[in-house]
Length: 274
Image: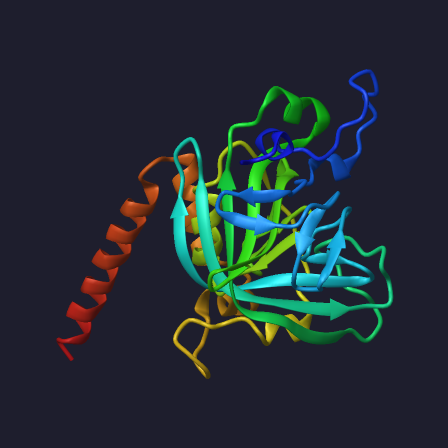
């Protein structure tokens, strides 16, 4: 039977009169069988990736290192009122000399990289928050994050910040300490377009070169990734231009595609005369 802490999405709360915010209260407290998953009881989120309990940080960050989930495939991206996502990938850890570095920044030192785990499934699911969750976790939205490998659950936590930072050019999203690197801007768009109950803000985010090497490229090894090559060659990203036009005028992207097809047909017709 699920514990009350699981149903409310918080750990052991203090006195109701004490309104001091403690981020650790937004971490699940597991005990017994939860949604068919057997977790030991602890005061924080449970992580088998490190074989230790961590009551204050995500499994994807902390302890003087930066961990990034490199997305290799998108298994599910569903919006509506209760968005649900499922990604296949690996966790890459970059240890740097500055533990204070926030997500999206790189240390000036010489980082070292290692693959923490492969063949992982990361799921994100929105769950309607209870009144207690809203009271104890201001500034957090009621998304549940789970990491599993095969049929084994390795990590689970409920509560993510209400602001998501995205870099369309780098195809990177930073959601609190959860960082995700996609193979292309189209992959990032599948996340952003289906998110609800959060604010999305564009911001340049650095990706360590060692992690960049782990990211899959469209078309396989040796192929050009045009969405990322165009900006450096022309100073203009066509995908971002189409996206911004579509946001300003609904349906503009379809008109732009039709115009491009007409121009291409005209150019081919002219070339066939020679």
